[in-house]
Image (cartoon, rainbow, N blue to C red; front, side, top):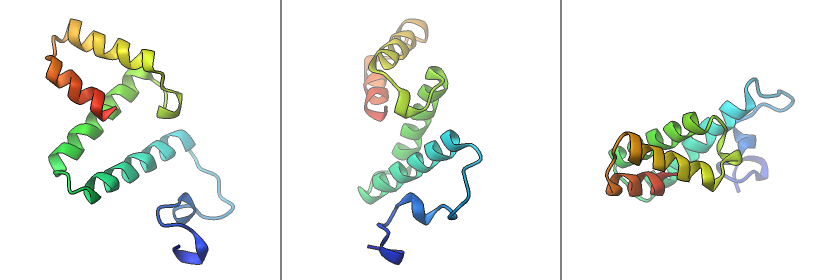
Length: 101
């Protein structure tokens, strides 16, 4: 346990008591990406891999127009289908995108 019995990485370590978030969805999403980045760094993944994955997740978020806690598998399938049909992405690229999302 960290400061005052709060687990490391807890949102309580990043928030001021009594203050509400200005744009909670955006701020929670950014915090999620930060935590995910830290997990990948702890696994000793290359910065380029981490950056690429983050860009894919952000691109899907823009496509879906909702935050991850509202994502549905059908949206991912539709997005990947569009990428294959419209942008003619290779299967290996789509596999990497699937892994990132």
